[in-house]
Structure formats: structure tokens, C-alpha cells
Length: 334
Ligand SMILES: NC(=O)c1ccc[n+]([C@@H]2O[C@H](COP(=O)([O-])OP(=O)(O)OC[C@H]3O[C@@H](n4cnc5c(N)ncnc54)[C@H](OP(=O)(O)O)[C@@H]3O)[C@@H](O)[C@H]2O)c1
Image 1: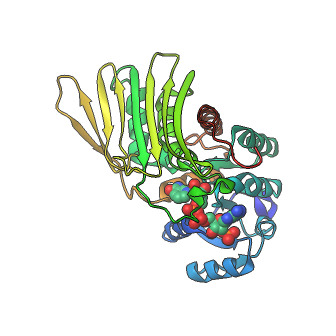
Image 2: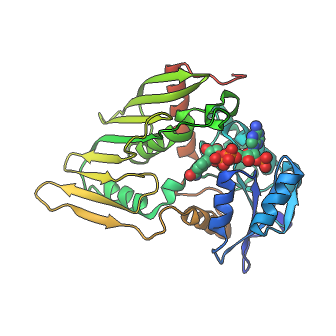
């Protein structure tokens, strides 16, 4: 890491935020109450945006370029919060400067881009993690543990959906193919990552997507696994769906209510038993769990998080690539 690459021992972990949009603001807000964290710098494509963001969140340094942020010696880890199309270039810039990186989901636009970044991080021994905050959520972790320990027997099916009703502003990044918009990469990445957590990488992938203006507005996926399990997943920019998820096994079922990607609780149903409610420690909607995992890794000198493993992010990107292939979704330049 920076300042000679030492671990941040005995002092807060110093965060740099790359980009100044809505989710960058959420992370800045969620880091503020953490005693272990300090946001020391922000970087933007424009000095004015960086300065405005720095003023808003009381951040000491504002950089008018990604390069200046990556070179800042008072930053231990950079949070990349650009639109999807720019994740690869931004992460690469930071890794090349030796900075640890937490990169927003989807990890990149394609599996090839993700592989390049993972290879670079591993080659240089620099920390890299996809901001798949769902995997750091305590209720999701508890569910995965129950499933691993056989609480519902052998997993036979996963169902999950994430749809928003819109309508979106015509200039919204989700409708812009140049920004790698669409439902799949932005929302579908959650159901796909959820299925991956309990079933691993699928052996067979079928998908149908409705494309409009160069992005997918609704996509349905059927994933088949070597074990015989299936996953039925959907995502949409034009349907405010239930946003629920369920994992079914040979001896029971686990159900997540609306907002399965940042749940506070879930229900375990087992044959012959009353339903059991599990609640994770909150706050469920906060990025604190994910930020704490990043800081734990940095202090321990770990370059990959066991909660959000890079091999898992790569597998999810391969699945998203295959779904895009099935529905004919190509972004400019591909
Ligand atoms: N974890 C979650 O719950 C969650 C929720 C929403 C979004 N996200 C992810 O976070 C990322 C950003 O989403 P957002 O909703 O914050 O988007 P946003 O509000 O549009 O902000 C994106 C920011 O990126 C920069 N940017 C814009 N266009 C760019 C371009 N063409 N190339 C490089 N940088 C550009 C801009 O900052 P500057 O002008 O400062 O460069 C902009 O403010 C996406 O990958 C999204 O999937 C995650």
C-alpha cells in the first residue's frame, strides 16, 4: 500500500473515492461513522466535481484526475464508483500505482476485462475486491453457512429477481449502451451472484432478453448445474418486481423478503418444523459491512477477501458474458 506499502496499523484506513456520483456519496456517508476509516481524498474527471464533493463530505483533498488520486500517498485504498464501462480503466490505473481497490459491481463490463485486472492485482500482490456488498451482509452470510451445513439438504433450486419500475430519465446511465447500461449488468448481477454463492458456476445457461436502444430492459435466465440444480433469475428496468429470493433444498427452503440483496432477515422452512426467523445484526442497508471487510483484509495483509473472492467475481462475469451472448447484447466497441 501507500506510504511505503505498510499496513494501516494503529491508524484509520485512508480511503480515496474515485468518481462523484450517487453511490460514491453513499460510501462517503457510510464511512463517516466508522472509527476505523477516514476519507482522505476524492478524484474526479473534473476538478470542479472533485472540489464540490470534497466540500460536501468534508474530505481534505480533491483531485481533478484519476491519476492524481492514484498517486496520492495518503490513500490506502481507492473505491471505484464510475459507470460500468469505466471500471476497468479506473481500477487498472489504481492497481498500476500500487493502490488497493474496492470496485463497484458489476466488476467490469466483460470477463476478459475482469481477468486482466485480477491477473494484474495478483501479479503485484495488491488488494482487489468487487463491491458485492450482498456477500458481506450478515443475514446472507448466515444463510450461506446454514446451506453449507446442510440445513435444507441438497440445494435443488434458486429463485431470485431484481426489477425496478422506472421510468428512468432518458439520459440515465442505465439506458446508455456506451456506459454499459441495461438491467443485466446493473441489477441482474445480484440474482446471478446470489445463485453463485450457493451453487457455484452453472454448467448450462439459457436466457431471453428484451433489448431497447442498445441495452436490455428485461432479462430472464435459467441456469443449470452439474448437481442437477436449477436457478431461475430475472431482472428488469421496467417491472417493479418483488425483489425476493429463495433457496430450496431436498429438506427445506430459505426465503428472503423484498430487498434480498441487503436483507435484515430471512425465514427457514423445514419439513415438520415451525418456520424459523433469522435476523442479522444491522444496519442492513449500509456499506459498513463491506467497508469493514476491506479494512480487515488490509490490516491482515490479505490481498483477496474470502467473503468476496476474486475467483467468484470472475465466474459471475463469465455467466454475465454468456447471458449477454444468448440475448445478443453487445456494447459499443465490442
Ligand atoms: N452497490 C450498490 O448498491 C450500487 C448502487 C448503485 C450503483 N452502483 C454501482 O456504482 C457505479 C456508479 O453508479 P452511480 O449510480 O453512482 O452512477 P452515477 O450517479 O451516474 O455516477 C457515476 C459517476 O462516475 C463518473 N462518470 C460518469 N460518466 C463517466 C464516464 N463515461 N467515464 C468515467 N466516469 C464517469 C461521474 O463522476 P465524475 O464526474 O466525478 O468523474 C459520475 O458522477 C455503477 O457501477 C453501479 O453499478 C452500486
